[in-house]
Amino acid sequence: GAERLASGTFAVFAASTDQEIIGCLKTSFLPGSAPRFTYPATGNGGRVAFTRRVVETASTATSRTLRVEVQWTWQSRTSLIATPLFRTQ
Image (cartoon, rainbow, N blue to C red; front, top):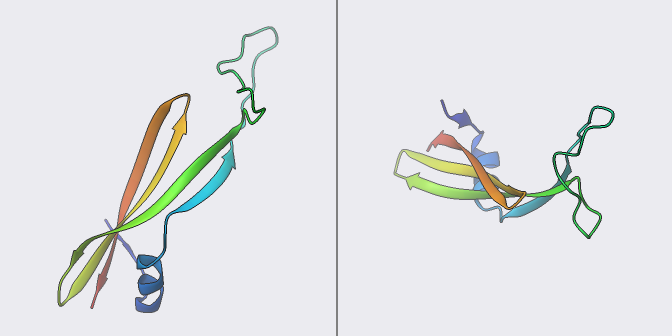
């Protein structure tokens, strides 16, 4: 089901711009095993940038629906997850 927000919070959230969040991945390897990924030349091997965006998907006289998306790229593969947010007017 959809998440629900209070009216005031919903309005602020709906107007928010894309945000970039830097996160870190923690990994571990068995002794003597080869790493499953290689560190880039920048030295930021464990860092991933997540972009959060808010998209309005529906608006009527009685309700509004937003879709919150989080997107990231890891090893040249882009992933995206999304969840709906619903509020009655």
